[in-house]
Amino acid sequence: MNEPMNEELQQAICDLPKAELHLHFEGAAPPAFIRGMAQEKNIDIAKIFNEDGSYAYQGFEHFLSVYEAATSVLKTPEDFARLTRAVLEETATQNVIYAETFLSPDFCGGGDVAAWREYLQAIEEEAARCESEMGITLKGVITCIRHFGPEKAKAVALCAAETQGDFIRGFGMAGAEDMGKQSDFAYSFDMAREAELHLTSHACEWRGPSEARDAIMDLGVERIGHGVRAIQDSSVVDLMLERDITLEVCPGSNVFLGVYPHLKNHPIQAFRDAGVKVTVSTDDPPFFHTTMNKEFQDLVQVFGWGIEDLNEMTRNALNAAFCDETTRDTLMKRLPE
Ligand code: ADE
Ligand code: ZN
Image (cartoon, rainbow, N blue to C red):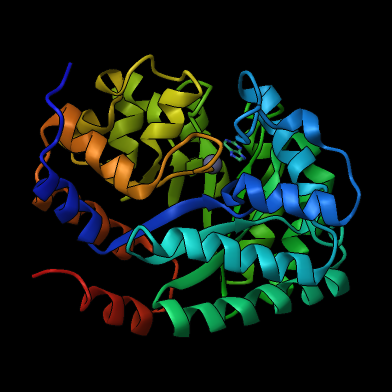
């Protein structure tokens, strides 16, 4: 057992400005928000909640289906604007100054570009209001969903290509890693690259190192979502170094979902020792009972990191952020020296 952390250090960690690159938009929805929406619309999703009000699921596949059930109560652009505020209010409590969120047109108009534009406008306008009220900058990474298949991904990539701009900065892939191959989605990633979007893909959360190699070689990603299992193959770690890949590491998610039995078994420090750039994010915070403050506190407790290690995570995140250079420079100035 680790000693409890003294209050001064806890407060110092809470006070640090933070940045996270890997935050699923609907996965960040507070359960009370989703329950409220369901009540308003008379939709019965009681079975996705525990008695204490938290999300109820067992294992990754079930998590994905509960995620989709929760998302199903969000119907209109206005609902997604309200979600934007709910997510940013939570995220801002962690002193997060910059977040990138995965947005899925599959859940917002079913991949139709005209419908997607309406959802996007509602999300972007609310994010701008939140930025001026709370000092948190949000950017979007449009994400296809692997288990929905390559054809649906093409429609999503078109939505991304058509709405690339100041807010939509990247294209990525989430979903069940055991379905198909990274290269099945090459057409969509090529379309996104041609539209000058930055690229990331979930890989090596569940499958072995070849998934990260494929995401790098077949899709041309700059970042990898998770990437943690690549630690098992030094040639893939070398490839990450050679291509200057940044990992979007979500330690609490990996432990909660059972990728690792305990944080002490997690390879985040091993990647740092190998010279790979890592960042820290929460993935789907209420689903995994985590926050950025908790992630940072746990890393200090388990790996003996200090404040400077945590600030390095934030600098890495801003350096690998898909935002424009002016935004990056402005945010960097808000970090401690
Ligand atoms: N969608 C939401 N969270 C995810 C995760 N951890 N892995 C893959 N797809 C996801
Ligand atoms: Zn994820």
